[in-house]
Length: 193
Image (tube, rainbow, N blue to C red; front, side, top):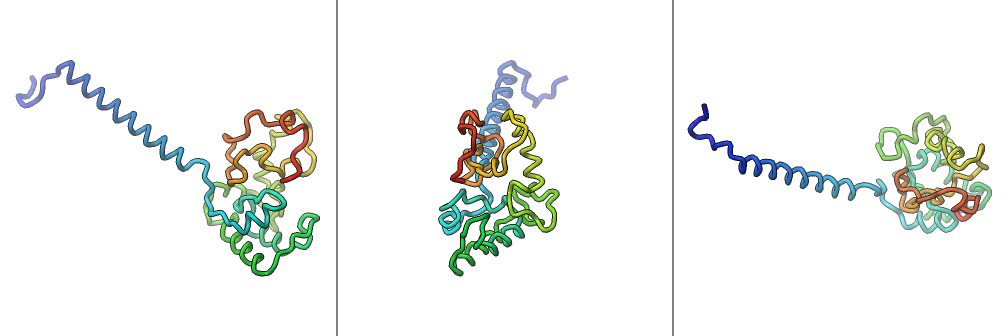
């Protein structure tokens, strides 16, 4: 028996309910898409113009959260022999960069999108991003994808060869250059990064 205050189960009422539910679902999906797309692909740290100008003058100004703080500290202490080059800075600039890298570098207890790079890091940690165990694990299939058995030392250093938004600190695997590989690089990575 239908209660006296209940609306009759009319076909138009069911259609209206279905339409409203569908509209709400589409709106929620759209809002989720806007939020997810708006947050996706943004670095989790503030950029520093001094860092970009000083370090980016010779190579890609690598995102600070690609190396542990301890690695950045060692790099900053050895700028007179920075991987074979003299990259010494005046004390004021050095202090600014040191603070920036310590603030935004990888550190246990400080969550970031790149925190997974801390997995398996030995003590002391390596000073090259490409020597981090997690980096090696993330890139283990690259030689096979490129059709080679081994990559020359430094082959993966120019991040921008594959990661089209590396300069913005975005290294998502979903945002690689389309058709990346030796055919597009002329067989060798760029030397500028």
